[in-house]
Image 1: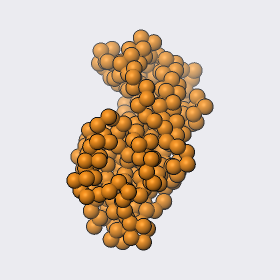
Image 2: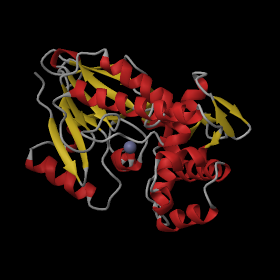
Image 3: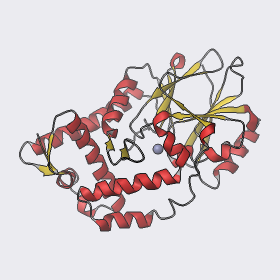
Image 4: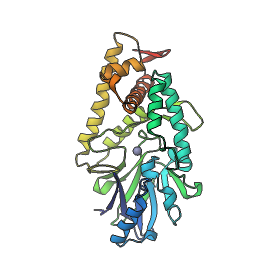
Length: 320
Ligand SMILES: [Zn+2]
């Protein structure tokens, strides 16, 4: 079995995995830590207490391009460390906040197009001021290498960590799998008792074309269900000891939504805003953040159903 060390900073878990001597020894770190002021201090304290020198951290595998997982990338990049991240998230890693600002702007345009009011959008943006300022420093291009599924990191005790591409939560989300132990380091792809958001992403930084996050997420879960996974170590929350039950819960959750939507559309044509309000009876009382989150979720499900040809879009309305 592999013995990892877990570092918890705020709500984030980072995992230190001992690498094989043949591969140079030292540690592989999963995720950089969140971009909070306190995080660097807490990490340094943890390393000191556990007699680990910073120089022993040789590689960092980043599960996805969100500031709480990748935010300390620029801090770690002053050391002699190789970074690895899912290939489709590379522009986010190397542009940081700038990427986030552009993606948010395109997302808000989509939401307005789908019937959310400018007031709701502005209310949300006001509450998130500062979130876009100097919070997530980009990483230098030459420090981070793109990885795709199948990439192997040799570990101690004849173990290896295999990268599994899990597009969904972000386009470049990845997980690390140790087959022999049935361990999965899932980032935010699988969380205990919580379904991660697939957000809204676009096919490239310069494109307005939406990326089908919900469809990819469902495929990623189906793919993970084929593996022999016995323990999941997520980026937040408790370790998952019943991976199959959790993944079935995800599956059933979305299947229920899809069935409900199909049945609504069997009697009338509806747009995104109407569908969202029928699915969420309390929608009119939602906070701006909740209204945005649920609308994004419904758009994602409708994009999947459209792609699968289970619904058709006529102008801004859907029908079966
Ligand atoms: Zn995330």
